[in-house]
Image (tube, rainbow, N blue to C red; front, top):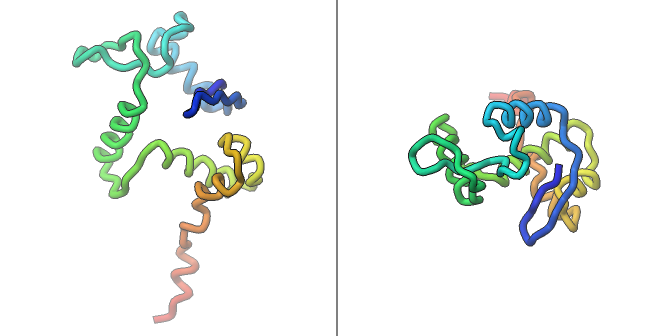
Length: 133
């Protein structure tokens, strides 16, 4: 995948096979498989429910994520960086290396990647059961 990131940076990265399948299904379902120049995630044309030829703006993505989180009853603030932190954390939790996570996140410094590592945020039930009451 080729990702356009902030600051005009481009980042090429292999695509996970599950994501590849989901994207293929999305492209087929939306008819975008036959129009390669069309935006991957288009905005809607007013309140018609029809896709426009314009890509979603970052603020629209953020609003959509917040709206979906609210409807599920999630009590936390969630945004695009939540997904980035989850991806990095799960990669590291499954034996990945910080240096590789840094490359995948396209960070200049491993310290920046470390800010997204949430492995220490989870307290297991076994740890709680150590409290003797």
